[in-house]
Length: 352
Image (spheres, one colour):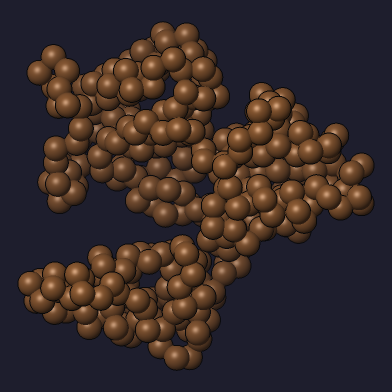
């Protein structure tokens, strides 16, 4: 794709991009933002934003749909004010709030990717009577803590691998791979229970986008007292620090960029998927034919000679590239030490 002589896609390899990042003499600000708003022509907006943000040196992963925008990105600090001005000049994005990363390295993203989607968060909902704008009330960190102490129902609206390494005290963490699955679980296990009908329900997610729609979903199914954490876990962490509040989030906040996670508390609530040791460090298997996401401690990393989910992947990755290409075509890789079900890993401890 071209627009006025510009390629509207990333043209650097990952290695070239990281080399370019290493040579930068300025800082980057890692942010996320979203807004549910009617977008008439998502493809046209996608191309306009790509050209604009490429000129500013922005990097990140952005989804655009007719229902709005969902962005995780970093912006060069010298271009920050220009970035805000240009974004806010668009009426649909006027004064959109930003979530600033708790931990802010310069390499959170290495390329700019903007994709047009059917929805900015895939939910599987096709009920024409559902109104996603009829959301629950926002809660700031102090109010959120207070309602937890008063016995409210707390629901984590993230995927299982996110809540496994960090969640709020006494939160219900559905065993789901996707937001679509999670809505189904919440409806079956929480909405239909009569004891929850009059209780306040608190929802939270990483930056707020999933629980905003989920709060409307619960109200649509008859719950009256539905609330969600404003700004998600990211803003909660900032408010706790700035206001000297009790931190009720335990562990790390899983994020969808090169950082993988940002630490919110010193608690380690997860375990290495290979040996069971206390650990909350996610990695992707170095064998690109596998690339599974799992938790690995330093001891197991040394045992397998890298971030491999098992010896099978470690041995496969050591083969000559031509031989690996042939094997990839004939037999997809599967871990020999972990049971794999969809995106999740089920450790068979002691068998690696």
